[in-house]
Length: 189
Image 1: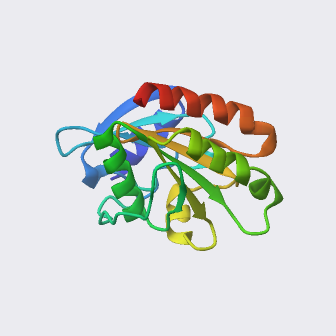
Image 2 (image 1 turned 90 degrees about the vertical axis):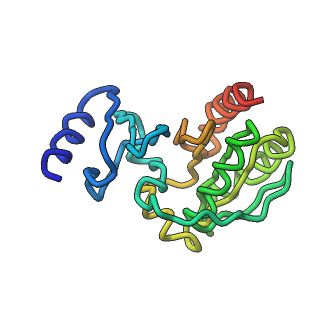
């Protein structure tokens, strides 16, 4: 475990590096890592020095044994997501269908979160092959803690089974989010 922690510490100091570690060698905290699925039982992760520490990581890393539970969802609509198991099921279904998953992390009483609500719903309507979900920080605390997210509103985009972007989602950051969403939608359609 000590060797793995040293490797992850070194990796976090580099702009980008790919690590291949057995799941038993991953330390309990995975800040700055995103999973890339492997046909073998190894965890493959990319460490980056981007804003992952502020906008979170894939919570499936912290809870790899979460049982997949299909969340309620319909095309063109925004659903609610509460658990890592629901996220796992949504990401797996989207990967199988050639779609993507978009999460919006928010909390009650957050003016910036409320200001992007309508545009998020419009994005879901405009991208029916995407699975859009709201993650209420107050109701999904375990999952939100697993992401390490520090700022809301924030978005996670998943494509081909992996977290491909963790970014801010406030009103001043909406255009950058919309561009990234369009790129992910184009790649998966």
